[in-house]
Length: 59
Image (tube, rainbow, N blue to C red; front, side, top):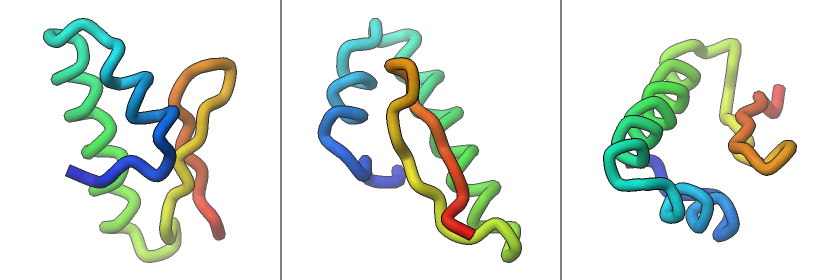
């Protein structure tokens, strides 16, 4: 699993109900895996926007 870049994002995921949390963590990992497989995307920045996880490329 990709480590969380910021503690507030980890806290948000920890607050989700367990069944939902597992699915959201799988989706989060898919986002990072897909981005790393596409050279043009480059590394992602994980932030909170409107209280929800957001993923943007640094390129």
